[in-house]
Length: 216
Length: 247
Image (cartoon, rainbow over all chains, first blue to last red; front, side, top):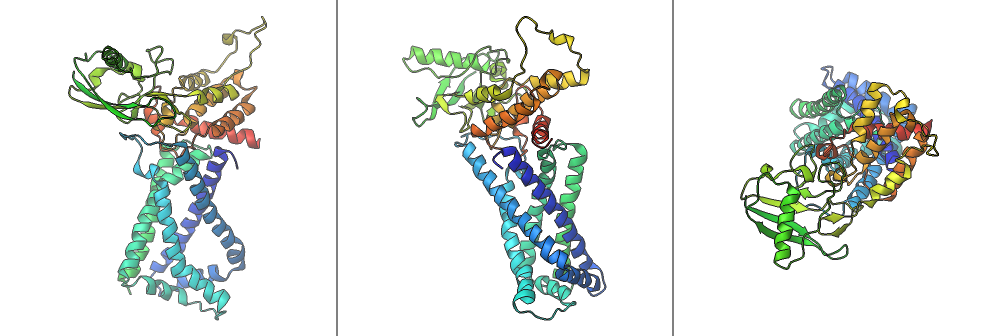
């Protein structure tokens, strides 16, 4: 853990794990767009919410992955800032804004996660493990509608966050494969996959938020 | 050419430095950038001022001694060129040019534009070599057959002159392009196989000890490298390090 390369590899591996999670999260949420009054979305959400493997094994792993990625990101940022003690008076750079500002997009995603947890995860935990309410397998779709329908500020914040998430993923995906020594980050195929993945994730989540904002 | 130069002046490593303005006239476009600084220094000496300290040696782009961040770019605006091979025809008369030292916590300023790059020497000493028997039984290097693609790749990495522009360009002051080039150079050659594991582990350990930052794949190092050392070397460094740790 002392080595800078080990830290980068762990950062990349936790990032790749979170990218798989985002893909399945999007796939499940996209079912809320199926015109069946939320039947498919409710069925999958209920399964995910009450399956003991998902709840007690996969969920803690996911929470650990998220925390680890953020904490390691902050540690690396601190060390990197320490390594450059003085800035140039005349600054001229050849790097993209996204690649240089992963910490900014990362912190926005962290703030967004706090809002997202406040909106969906905390009420769910309260419902299941504090108030011990009887499970209602049809509530998920209505909850989703309630959060976005006509809620301009929330929908706008979610959409902006999804754009920044897409930017973070775009650099993160190609960068992580270089960090684990698999392929150079500018590899053409890897760049294509990173573009398609980041654009797809960003657009997919935005489409869901906007759809539920307009359609009651 | 008449120019306004904004140059970083710093008496020593402990005193706080700052930018000073210098006007210089009648500079020939065919002069090299360092020759222009020589003219300025002669002017300063004639006026009884302290000349500007800057590093230089071969002045033909090989030794890696020259440095300077010119208008925000290590080694200046020309791609794949060291400061000593940069010519004044790249600028226009009336231009303002900012000249600063390489910035990194691991490259402390000694005086003006001269920085201490001995951290690179210590990284090199930690593993950037091959052990060869020199007791009279030295085998001719050309006697060992090496596949052409491997030799070409090794040569591309070996082109690194260890000037430190990668560190100066990187927002994290990462030295991974330099270390990656040195590790890759030997990893491609049979002569480098014997110390392969120890080399990468020791060089990375020394790199971390020196306080360089880690790579965030922004690509600034490759863009400013005067020898066009590719970012692929960093990928290979990560690969070599993981192989050495796991296998």
